[in-house]
Length: 405
Image (tube, rainbow, N blue to C red):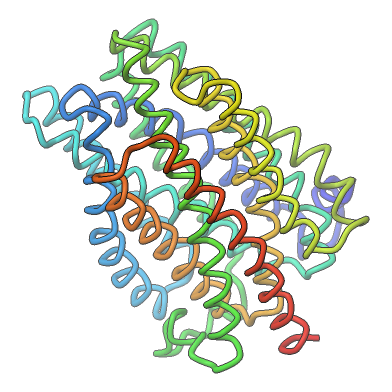
């Protein structure tokens, strides 16, 4: 396997460096089940699942501010320092939120529920953008599956750890432990080598670097695909939250169940990344991979609807597959779309599409979900979004051929 070669080779470009990137990605995915399970449970206890779309709207404001600040910061500092300060700020906010919950400050849980949506996209996508710059395209295609698998193993172990801690010590203890694991990825990532292009910082920020006509159009269509993917996933997320809240009552049981859901999500993601992607990527085009994703979503949506979409089990299975494939198939395919871009453009594209558009899409669908909660209408919306998604894939690869080939 190619990634093993990079780990054991005497080549100075990889020797002793790749392991820190892999450890960082493992720890990022390990900490997320801890943070998400605890913050979601505390928020539901105070406000209920039906309040989550409103919280998603607030997320966009705070994410936009965070991107503005850290985009400017990255124009002067390397990505390792950006990652460090994001992690420190996140740990501080989760500390204040958990402490506030202990003091019965009702809106303390709002802080962690909102920020969990922000810190994870920033940690994940800074690490992946670094790898996208560090490896050449052929190298990146050969390792993206195993890299994702290592992240999934982190998610599986994090989910199991969450379930154990919750059943043994309760939700608040999970929240305290999660703070430590938010900081650890930044410590490991700080050991990775600074990229040469990042060592010579100019006044141009990553977002400013993509202001090139052809590149801007290309990223615009990628952003539209990301937006549609999030429309579908967050409708499924909302349907899952409603069924979950109605079916499971006790706090410790909820946290434990969520830990199990994230364990299964990451297990399926691991299989897709470690078995499916290494077999598939050398044999099919990137375009076919991208079309395959929404096509399978349509199949699973049909099966879930026929099985009873109001029940927890079918909606949970549908939700788990969507999240697992989003973490694996869609993430890998999207990273390959960024490969033709220049180093700073990759960071800029990810700031806009993987961070800002990702959450703006969630806020937009949240605004719809506040007023529109009919299961049959939501299913029809998902079908429409999936069909439009496949049409946009064709458009993106036309631009890809004309702009970069």
